[in-house]
Image (cartoon, rainbow, N blue to C red; front, side, top):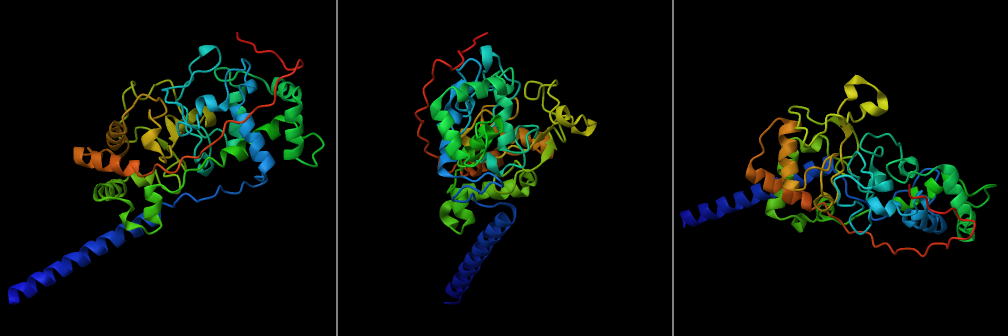
Length: 346
């Protein structure tokens, strides 16, 4: 009888210890991360009226923003591919290859800044960049405005989206409309979000071990907050610089924005939301397996050798960051007219 009582007591203690460990994991996770909200955040000075969101959606899908009239935002940020394009680096005007991997537009509204080097302070500023970049859309603001103004459908859409403005159809308003649409591209309700909201069973045992390792090894030092990243700038290769096959020597990162020596090879930490389906990885796009990326980050950033078991666990945890993908209907775009500039394919 005494043996039975002791066994029962031991089981009770083990159960209490397990429950305490689970509660501690939830508390630690809540201190570092937040779930993605169910509704898009409100943008300061850019209200998400239905008219403005619809206009932004049209502009996001319209290839006529490009000089060739072949390339749209959707080309490199495909809403059917988690806001990315499954390319090491994107293909732009005249089949030119860009210098960096194309970041996802999904949940980008939660980033502290846009682009790998943070050169755009928000999504509106970001929207202007690719339109004018010679290796991307290779267009000019003047030609974009001439194109949009040639189509009555767009003229009316800008009037409805920016009521009361003397000149609603402007390059700035084009960017604001795209921004407010992109802000709707959020992916809530991932298993990890459910876990943060109190559903302890949303993650299985291996995924919870991966979360423990992710926090315990130091990954969460750079990858935290709502987006598990995107909030700060860090050198790539803090402890051990990856080889040139992963980190090209001629890409100096944020240094190209600030011209500050300390910013050489510094990049904005990539957000990890939907990371399991937005391969390839790193600014070079040279790594295709998420597990390989985990191992590289261990040696390059943390100076540790992540074991095979830990790499498997962390990779399993990262897969729980895939949320509900937004369903976006391709818009019917305003037809071109005789006044619409013709495509230039040089």
